[in-house]
Length: 493
Ligand code: NOJ
Image (cartoon, rainbow, N blue to C red; front, top):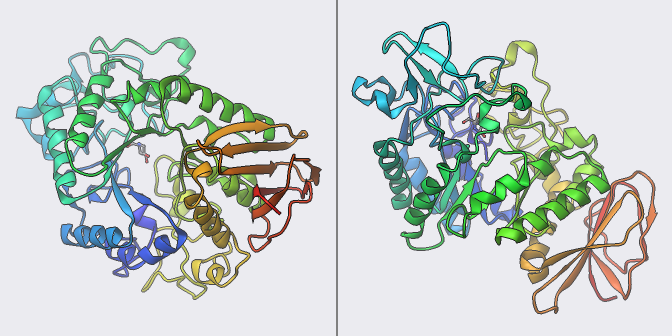
């Protein structure tokens, strides 16, 4: 969830914790198990909260710590777990740590001449070096992201201890875990070697894969494990190679879950998706890691926009929620939202990500449930009808499709934890079976990526549990599927 754009409780045009708390029933009805909240901590908002100036307080824009506690209690009362975002790689340049001359060695700094950065690393969000000259210290400091996001030096044990204190602060409050921002970035080679030419000017944040990171994650894991209940660590491992990603599961002693982004960057194509799934299956099985699946988030163009139609987004929902692993749904996917068109004079994100961060339309009224004024970004197209209240009343809507898929998934051992196996299917169609460990529950999924209807014969008798194009459809599977559609089947008439 991107709290800034979910729901506005105080009418200032920016989503906040009170607004989010009031709308929890939407999430409960949808049937999610847990929410991950993007940062709501004190921040100058150069990177919309990923530049943290106080890890243990709520930015006044989003509310107060009391609002957070109330939100957590209400979420737990609905059986929804809450993960918060931990941003360990960098802070804001306004963080007291960065401004304290006694803590200069908490950050990665290097001496040198003001016209020659220490190495060739590039920052994210623009074509510039990952180094900024700091007049105050007469040194360079590293920032894998914006200059306002200096990188902490995890080689300094005081930094690790401080970040463990941050984790304890939230775990003590009762959070169920963390999504850890660019976690693969925290360990760095102190020799700071140049990125090789084949990296071709990519931001260093997408290639940093240093072995020093793993002990840091192991100790984060030990800290999480020392708490009661199931506290979970989900890492953003933004390395676009699944083999590298799975290394961050360690020996079952690092991340519980790691985001695997290559599928997010895969076109809507049956063959390409089959290869991605088989790759993910093989790589995760090799390390005993549990896969994750994600199609959209607050950093990327929404998949409804990328795939080009609601029909594809519906079929993609069936795919996302029936693969083996933990699926992540980005707020608004369940409404089939597209990226908003953001006019040049309303662009605010230096990383060009405003479109996918548009506010959620709650109803068909003029303000779409965002009271007293214009939200910080424009609404996505079609908000008059593509909004929560309107889609709730339509049993055939994409919202009901998501609800139905999540409900079926919850009741199916095969879908929750069963094996995955590809089935024969014609070109343009992906078909697979999920089977529970005891073999008692079997499901078949057929995704037709093409526009034309396809024939997909199956052994035995199967019935339709969920049809992407029409979530109200039921009945026997007759051996074919229409174009840009998907079916979830179970055994029986
Ligand atoms: C990944 C986050 O998802 C993104 O929004 C942020 O800009 C960078 N990490 C830097 O913190």
